[in-house]
Amino acid sequence: MTASPPAPPADAAIDAVGLTKRFGDRTALDGVGFAAAAGDVLAVIGPNGAGKTTLLSLLAGIREPDAGEIHLPRGEVGFVPQQAALYRRLTVAENLRLFARLEEVADVEATVERMLEQTGLGDRRDDQAGTLSGGNQQRINIAIGLLSDPAVLLLDEPSTGLDPRQRGRLWEFVLGLAGRGTTVIFSTHNIAEAERYAGRVLVIADGQGLFDGPIAEFHAAAPAAGTEAADFESAFVRFLAERGH
Ligand SMILES: Nc1ncnc2c1ncn2[C@@H]1O[C@H](COP(=O)(O)OP(=O)(O)OP(=O)(O)O)[C@@H](O)[C@H]1O
Ligand SMILES: [Mg+2]
View (cartoon, rainbow, N blue to C red):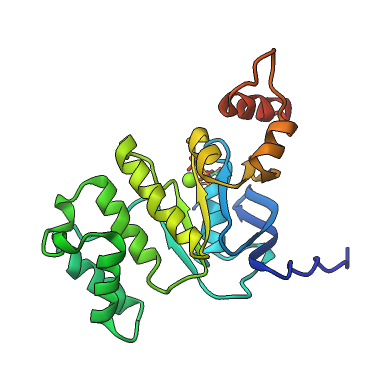
């Protein structure tokens, strides 16, 4: 095959083509591609071991793909790993300052102030990070991912372990970013959350991209069993089962 991949869509903030990643004999990701525009919110869903974290780590530039390309016409990518990499004994402000230095931002103190405002954690600035709730630690985690003012923000299972109220606040914050033009790509096992907050879903299983499109189209691709319109979760399970996953 000598055909070159199609050109990225004109308005793409990120365009991934044929991403493949192997670990030894195991193909964790097998030719997955998608494109997203500014302000898109894309959920990556699939069973354990599907390749979601692998995909995000390639997009974040943490790992190199064995094949495929990632185009970022408009800027950088920020990555929010599942585990917050905070120093629990440092204060909120000290953590932010540390990561701002690591990121080599021009004005560290101004950046710290911006992040405190962004997270709404100004009043907790002198508290040890380890004393914050999971939701507030996740806000800091996201603020660190936003340090480079990225065009695309990647979040790996951002709401895991948060209670419903904290999840609500997290999504309010993330959707606010998308509303201002940040492309948001998140992985989740919470199918209801994907349906609620993402405009589009990318379904992967065993490293294969199975579906990429609006939620409504996914419903059409995974028709409801029985008379009632089945909920998204059962439609999703059936969709995977019908494809041998
Ligand atoms: N560093 C690694 N070394 C070897 N195999 C790996 C490595 N990272 C991931 N894998 C394998 O790649 C596949 C995809 O893993 P990945 O973590 O991307 O899945 P995931 O969809 O994020 O799963 P989960 O929902 O459990 O987080 C799995 O089979 C996993 O065992
Ligand atoms: Mg994962």
